[in-house]
Image 1: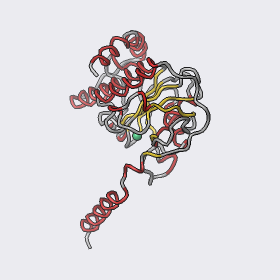
Image 2 (image 1 turned 90 degrees about the vertical axis):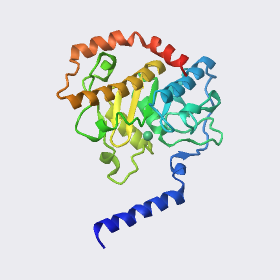
Image 3 (image 1 turned 135 degrees about the horizontal axis):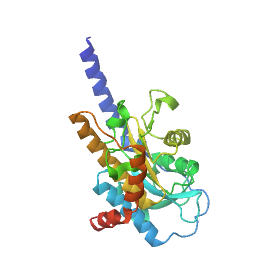
Image 4 (image 1 turned 180 degrees about the horizontal axis):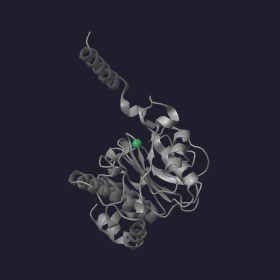
Length: 270
Ligand SMILES: [Zn+2]
């Protein structure tokens, strides 16, 4: 049997296996609740989290997959994240409170995102972070699978700093994983790769973006994606000029003061 025949048979075998095992069941899960819910969250806070889900879909940061969370406003040891659902159709009733270890408080049997460990372990590691977005946006993926770093090319993305770290899951669990952040161990390792940055790319998977507030995090997620698109286009033209450290600092300060303007536009268009 030649190589092509073997590959063909293996390909068919994988397709058949996927059909048989319903892959959707592998990326959501039901966990027993633990603990008592924290103080009720203002409706305006929940509404913003719902709107963030919808904005991120509208701007193609997320599609059927990806998620956004906030740290609980009155309990820093908890975070708020939707049940397992496509972001575009998330409502306030879908928001669940979680412990930082990823255990739900009030899921009440609803399926939760498998990759919730991304959120909890970053909140545990970074006291300054109050919002986390996880995305599979195709624009950023090339920079996680090549030697080309994602770097700020325009004034709207100085928050990227001088470059963007890449999380290599093989360093933690070898080369046979499904690339998903399935455990606290992987969440911790991802948080380690993020370090003090705002964005970490995940090789062959996507990106995770953090902010000290939800609106800032949404802003960063959208402009990270746009930076990736522009950088890729510029690289086709030849050598690229990136922001210098002083420009990174100055643009981050000036553009950072305009986040509400962007949020209000995006919210009005959802
Ligand atoms: Zn993912």
